[in-house]
Length: 221
Image (cartoon, rainbow, N blue to C red):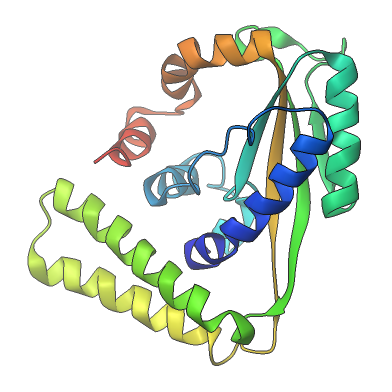
């Protein structure tokens, strides 16, 4: 999943940036990095613990961008531009609705919409992008292992696993369309200012247990 996410992220970010500019946004939105390996591991033990296999299928926000907008009117226009670029959303959580209990998020509000990003290519046609993405994923995964003090033999096993999976993109998946679920988070500027100050505390609050929080923060290694 991480290899696919890194391979498709540049194309998705380009489409998202084009839609953001048409909506009257300045700059290119706020694109965070592709979702991290350790955060996904943490969700395996928390949010996705009871999901059917393959559990990573539940990750609908590996590729994401946050759009900071002036007001509700611009937010509505921005969502319309996202539809034009990516098609209708397959899921939308509008926490600006009056019916939403903002106490669940400690007062934070945003609208999160998931779309299907279609590269219009097959995985076989993205061979070079997949190869580059696999190298990035291997570096990130082994980097976390180094930070945790894993020995060289274990790090090599992680690297071999990445190589094995990457080969599937050019074999079993070669003719499959290269597409992935992505997420756009729409927020007005006052909530963006709030998010910058409270997100670290939110990471503590969202952890179901200490072990889950450990995995979440380990991504920083």
